[in-house]
Image (cartoon, rainbow, N blue to C red; front, side, top):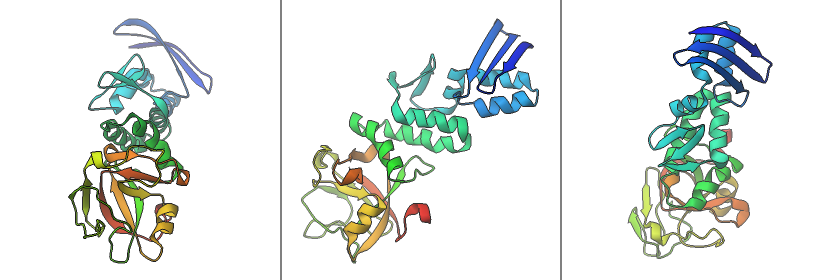
Length: 255
């Protein structure tokens, strides 16, 4: 490879070079997912190492895996183009905090297994809005208010495939419990506030709901989220499966 010329304006970088495909010119802007790495190498004069990082498609493809592919700078999942807020945030993290981007990529891979287009569109905004963190394996943490005996505050006739249920239909939420409900039994209509399902929510919502009970930390795979109700300022969601991982009285961002 032979570098012919280059120019950095602070917001963009132009490089002209001769490589395996002959003469090429690459222009990248500060929105490029590899921008920080590119500029670091540029400042160090390591131009030949920098050039492979300039290709947008290759940069994205190197981060995405599984069913995700990149064609002409666009991201596809199972041959369907994806975009929106989550992909924008992934590209932001790839650019600004590349070491933190992997958990979002795993979150996206889990989320796009969800059969609900509405959940795919709404869920990440809901989590970011309510400060609910994403785990390294691409799940997320939320809260659930339960009674002093660790059973849910309310019961119902929802079909529980895994977990302990009392005669009133209340579900036991002790630490280590893995609760699975029949997805078809969980209300998918986000316009219905109080409806059937396994409910989790923000710290404020769950803490108020528990009254004199317990506050549990819940781990949910995004593929198992069913709906984000519009009532209560979007502070809760319904799922068909979750794990109880801890008991906590503080907000997760304070721990």
